[in-house]
Structure formats: structure tokens, C-alpha cells
Image 1: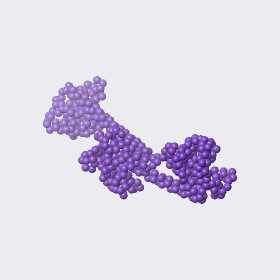
Image 2 (image 1 turned 135 degrees about the vertical axis):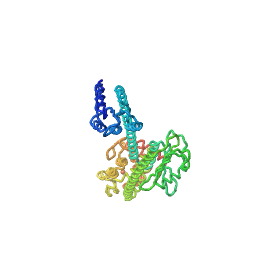
Image 3 (image 1 turned 90 degrees about the vertical axis):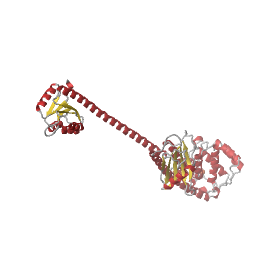
Image 4 (image 1 turned 30 degrees about the vertical axis):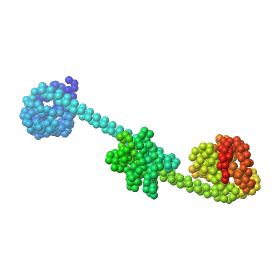
Length: 503
Ligand SMILES: [Fe+2]
């Protein structure tokens, strides 16, 4: 039996005759047999040999079978130990069982019984080892699954945090940041309703400026008054609030199942509070979701701070440029308020055509600053009473490019810059500075061009008096398609007929 040869059996007994008989018998049966006269000898063998099974006597000199069994258990608890004894006392049986002995054989030994016993304990050992391996595998698998779940959740979390970070960059206005904050709360958490309140020290009540709601939620909306106290407390303490399960309905009405409120501070001062409420289903907010909300409000606060900074720069620059234009216009009483009137006419035409608010804003800035480039033209030319020489006219023409350069330098008004640059282009391509024609000319520049021409003709100039209204209208009508965009002319004439341009 080939497999038997691999199995090493250790026999321990202080009676050499027993060792001789047993050893000889099992060697012949194909086992690998080792023998020892006491526990100490047996342990030395166990240190150097890999034993599959041990048979030991109890009463032996130096180290008895009970102590040996205990040592074996500590060394390798998979090695089965079988005790061979002539007088199995209850006390010895108890001790050996405690030390992991798997069976008893009563002396005198029956070799056939011994072999049956060997087969059984080796089979049991196999099962025991397999069981240990399986258990370890199962533990390993469970650990792997746990780690995989944790990793997955961490990746998802990072993905989410990254999304939150990118969501708040590139928003152009503070109001949009708060709208995005409410929308993101619905996206990221199971909230049915999210609101952002500005907390005003003077009024002492939260003022709702943005809200978002889950489409599927048919529940009744919450009212500010229902959460007002909690919002004011969160604002006062500047500490987030999490009511995972609204069980007692003491702080909140029963229609709110779960609630979170997170303060938003700007430059160290409380600015507002973001609230999230679960109104239906069985979802509840957790600390993790609250962490997401705090992360979001934090990023939103940064975005608002940056915008405030940007809006300040923008406002400051515009005011500075406007002061330049006003100084310029003040030099020439005839052109005083010219930019303001041109802007009003242009915005009226653009509004009638259907331009959106962003385009109207652009036109407003470009209109007020369209002649800012004249700052670079000498007063003698600008205020020359008679006809300009060709050379002087060429100089004057430079003002649109100079203006575009002044405004474009800071990179904040790229669209406004283009309009300023092209406000003297003509529809047929005979204007300046680039001789653009038709749709090549920015649309808002085509509007500004007509408004500019109308205002110039309807006011006195140092080189000529104002023109009669009829003549102006006739010039504009005739200019459709050559000087001006016909569509802009059509809208202008419509508004003109409605007496909208009486300055
Ligand atoms: Fe101009």
C-alpha cells in the first residue's frame, strides 16, 4: 500500500519488547515507524520528524504520556495521540482527554485493533486538517470580500467627493452655487427635499433662496416655520445637526422622517444653512451622508468666496473704466452721456429681438465702454471743429482697437472686447477695423453700431449740428443692408415708431 509508506507512526513506551513487536509489525504493514522510550525522547523525534500519529504509554520515566500529549498538542494540535495503558484510571482518562488524546487502547495490545485505530485516527486527522484549511479559506474569502467591499465603497466615496469638487468650480454666480448645492443634496443623499436658507442677523428668520425636490416625491412640502427653530440653532451654534430617525416628533413634525442641517460659513461668518429632509420611504440619513453634506457646503462656501472676490474685481474694474469714459465725455459737452444713451438704445433693440439676459449684460458693459479707446486719441483731433483730414480720420479709427485692447487686457470681458472692437464695422464690409461683413460681425456689435449712429446723428457734434429726425430715419432706412443689419433696422424702426427713443 503505497500511501501507507508515507505515514509516520511514533510509538512511545518504556517496555522495549512492546516497541520491538509493534514496530516490526507496522513496518511490515508498510508504515514508517519511529520509537521512543519516554516522552523526552519522543519530543526530540517530533522536533526533527513530521509525525502523522503517536501511540504512547502513560507511565514512563522522565516524561510520562500525559505530559507528552500536552506537549504534542502545543506543538501541532493536528497530530492524533492514542494512549496505550494497562490501568486506565478515571483521573488519567480525564487528564488525557484534556490534553487532546483521541483514543485509548488497553494493554495487552491487539495489533489488529491497533491498525483499525490507526486507520480511523488518520482519517479523522485528514478531515480535521481539511476542516482547518476550509475554515481558513472561508475566513480568507470573507476577509477578501470585506476588503473588496471597503475598497469599492472608498472608490465610490472618492468618486463622489471628486464630483462634488468639480460641480462647484466654474459656476458664474453665487445664486447658482446655492441652487447647485440643493440639487446635489438630492443627488447624493436619499433626501426628498433640500433647501438653502440665508440666515439674516437683522431679521432673525431663515430666508429660503434655493430649493430642490426629488421628482418621485409626492409628499407635502415642508414649511420654513416647521424647521425654523432648528435652522436658527444650527446657525447660532455653527454645528451640523443630524436627526437620523424622527421618532418622538418633539423637534420636527411627523411628516419628516429624517433630517439634516449643515451651516455654511463664509470668511468665518455664518452665512446660511443647508437642510435636507426625507419625507417618504424608509431611508434615513447617516453620519456618512452628513459628512458628504458638510463637504459640499464647504466647497460651495469656497466657490462663493471666490465669486465674491471675482465679482468685486469685476465691479471695481467696470467702475474704473466707466470713470474713464465719463472723464472723456466730460471733455466734450456734445458727447456727454453718449455712451449711456447708446447703451439704452442698444439694450432696447436687443431685448426686442429676444437676446437673453447674459447677452443684455454683455451689451450693457460693451455699450458703456464702446468709445473708451478715444482716451488714446489726441484732443486736437477729437475736438477739431472742421472736417478731419484723411490722416486724422485714420487716427480716430484706431479708437475701436485701442478700446478693445484696454478692456481685453484683463481677460474678463472677451465678448465685450469683440463688440467694442467691431462697433464700426458695416454690414456690407466697408467698415473698420477688419472690414467684416454680414454675419462675420458679432450680432451685438451690429446692434451697437446702429444705436451709436442714431445717437451721434441726433445730437450736436463739434463739426456739425444734429440732424432732423426725418432725415435720421431716412438715413437709417437707406442704411439697411449696406451700413446696418436689415433685421436690426427693422426692430429699431418698430421701437422708434413706438416713441421709445426720446432722450
Ligand atoms: Fe465709436
